[in-house]
Image: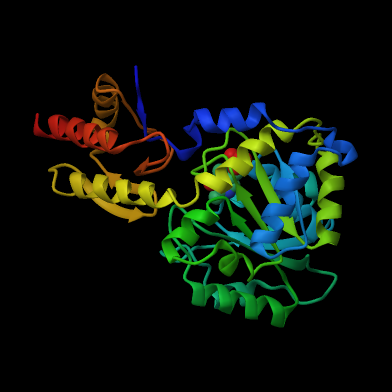
Length: 338
Ligand SMILES: *Cc1c(COP(=O)(O)O)cnc(C)c1O
C-alpha cells in the first residue's frame, strides 16, 4: 500500500538523490574528529546560523539534552514551557541524567512563554533555591511560529537577568520559511540552537546542536558520556547536507498542502478545524467515532495518529503530494457524509 502517512513529518524516506549522496560520502572516525562529511555538516550549520561550532548527534532529544547539560550544572534550573518537547516528551532527561530542575511555565496560545511569568519564576540567589540558569524556547511549537518581536524581548530579558537562552529549533526551518527570513535571523537571538534534519527536511537520522566553541566542547564530552560518540557517521551527515541543499525551500509546499487540507476539511459536518500552523492541521472529531474514522482512513490508505494528543494532528511532509492530500480529503468526506 502506498500510504499517505499524516502521523508526523518524521516518517519521510530518503529520496534517490539523498541515497546517492549517502553512498558517495567520504567518511572517517568521528570520535577522532576525522569524518570530513560530519565536520562539513557541523561547520555548515554553525556558519549558516551564525555560531562558532556545531555538533552532529543522532536525535533531537540528545541534542537538547546535551545543550541543557552544557549550559547547566547539577542543581541548576531551566525555565521551559509546560508543553515543550524538552520538558514533556524527552523522558525528563534533564532531571534524570543532568540533575537539572525544570521550572515549567504555561504557554500562551501562540506558543510563547509570557515573559512576566518567566521573570517571576527566576529564583533569587539564595541557598534555598535552585540556580536559575537557562530559558529554553521552542520554534515552531506545535507548528506555531514564535513572533520575531517576542524572540527579541526574550533575548533582552535573558541578558538582563543573566540567563542563557536555548532554542529547540527541531522545526526551525519551517519557521524561517514562514517568516520569509534566513534561519539565522531567528537563531541569532539564542546562545544555542538544536535543529532536526530528520523531520520536514527529510534526512533519515540526525540533529545538529550549534553554539559557542566552549559550549560545543562540553556538549561533545556529554555526547560521549551518553553513548552518542559515533564513527563513520558521514554517511548520515551526507543525507543532512543534501537536505540543507535541496529540501529547505520545499517546506513551503508542505505548508501549502496543509492549507489545502485544512480548507478541504473545514466545511465537513462533524469536523472542527482548530488550527492550521505551518505543516500541521489540528482538528477535533467526535471522540466516540475516532477508532471508526481511523479504520476508514486506513482502508483508503491514510494513516493518522490517534489517542496521543487530545485533538487530531495531521502533518504534511516530503512524502505527501497533492494527490495524497486530495485522497485524505475524499476519505474524510465519505466518512462524515455516511
Ligand atoms: C521531534 C522533536 C524533538 C526531538 O527529536 P527526536 O529526534 O525525535 O529525538 C525535539 N523537539 C521538538 C519540538 C520535536 O518536534
